[in-house]
Image (tube, rainbow, N blue to C red; front, side):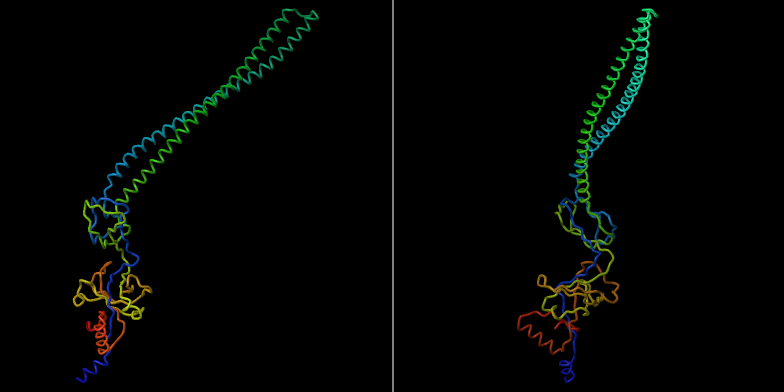
Length: 365
């Protein structure tokens, strides 16, 4: 009895604060997959626990509406592209023909101008010859027939020179007319080309939007890892926009997130304190338990709870799975008290109607 009384009043027993809610958290390597659009599930391509590579298909939603739109726009796009190619070919042919015709007319104009210059020179010479015959006729040193023949030749040269000038003017008018007609046809083709390119751009924009919608209906793994959670969905079920479907867990450090009542956390839980972590559904007496150390204590109360983050320490029992979102129970060592102090504390809680969540090393009081 004396030994028991001594133990009751003097023995120090470790006390623990027990979490209301806690879970394992995959740090910085957990991605949640949500729907970008509402749709009907037509196929599920993954199962819980599957090892996935980035880009693997998880869930296929119905894309029939987008497929029809995409098919129609693709046909319109092909038609417009064909029209645009025809317009380009027509423009190239027209430009080539104009260049060839323009070059031919300019060559003719150049020849006509050279011929005109030669005619002017010959005309000047013939005018001088006719003038000499006229002087000789006045001196009665030449016959009138020779003078009239020289004068007739001169007049014919004048007529030929005027014809050459008319031909030059006609060629210049044809060049100007051809240029005007080419510019009008070119302007018409450019307008048709611009309108076709605009329509094609609009159709291609719709195709990109439809393709994006189809891709968004195919929910794929954004990273490589393990499919840690998958919503209970069935083929044929309609899911809403933004609905959470899956969680992919990649390799990375596992931490513990625990929530405590403010009365048990504030002033009691400090950084560096040791803790025990027991997995729900796995008997700690059979499978063992994890050990952790407090890394961070939230300074603000959220939903009447305090968030405490812990880091696992020591070796992990081989039969305990460390999976993202796995529920656990966290017991943080907050101090030591004698059995007498614990009894008084429990009695006070009973009298005040409060429930105690402190545990000793040997069990609950």
